[in-house]
Amino acid sequence: MLTAHELFGFMSPSLALEILTYAYETDKPLYRATLGAVAESRKLRPVFLERQPRPQRHAAMLATLARPALDMVASNLLRTWLLKKHKQMLADFLDSLGIAHQEGVVEDLPATIDEAKLRSAVEALITKYPPEAVAVYLHAFNEMNEVEWPGLRTMLDSDPRLQLGGAS
Image (cartoon, rainbow, N blue to C red; front, side, top):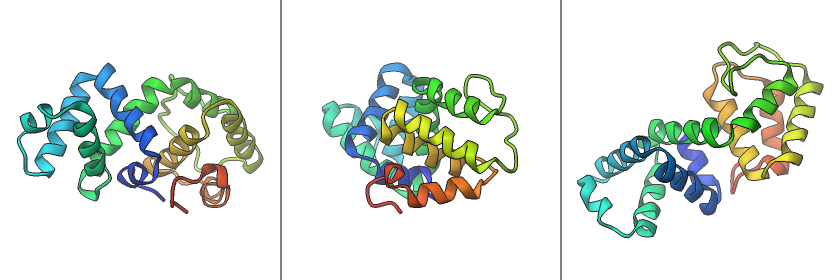
């Protein structure tokens, strides 16, 4: 299973930048918290990063987000991006599984899920949405929820369309 910081390490640099840029453009408090955590991790003052040109600052932030110490920060960034930008993808997945949700957010996941339904739901996501975004969502879904579905784990490990970088 890939943790949030590992997802940042394995996803394409363009997708990682898209996620960080999304926070920068739409959620200033999240972006500032992320910048502050990165600065603290690097033993810098946040103003040092703020004064850097944005491409340089974002490159440094993304490199740091791929470290284990920033897993919680990376997780918050991923959750926000998924819940705000890809709300429809989350809703489509849960709807196709027959799981009640509120705009892609679920209170209680079932302990088990029908394998055929799961395969069909994943296939529908892959055909409708950018494959890498689907892969990040499904890996995050598998890691961030208390319930683990063995069928999803198997798909994430074996389906090449759901692989991220060097992840297996």
